[in-house]
Length: 177
Ligand SMILES: [Zn+2]
Image 1: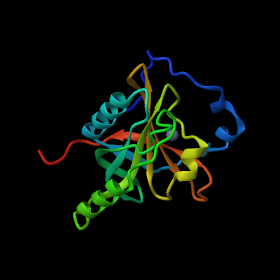
Image 2: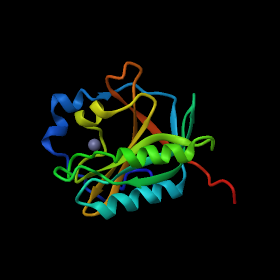
Image 3: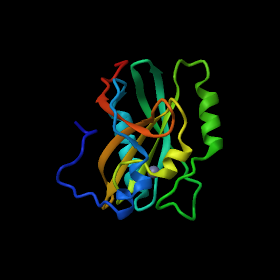
Image 4: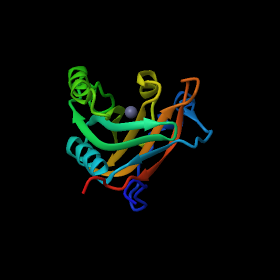
């Protein structure tokens, strides 16, 4: 399955990912919530992440959510407004967010998450990612190494909003054809 880790690829892990502030970002508990995502959305995220390497790509995850988790059928790239630190920070264009939100109004689909890439770093959230995270959103991180997607993982805030839970990703069959 494409959403899993590519075992042939070595993903560098900078020292900071083993530091206390980074480890404190992760909640080790598990959840029954799942992130179901279709192949088109995975392809779009991987292409976006590869295109921007060695800088960070970011975009919106569109679909719907319920008590079981997230159903994502589209990943829509959005400009990363952070020019100065585009290698390790992203600022998603708020105007693009609002435009997409307006377009989707009344469609039954909505923005349910955000993806971004981690060039030459694990697909694990950072303290900066935690500080920017919204309750109820799915956060997909694509690790890119040597310009290709090496690992793709999904995260969401836990009940207290203080840490990220790891969310299992599953293929969502294509619909409508
Ligand atoms: Zn990040």
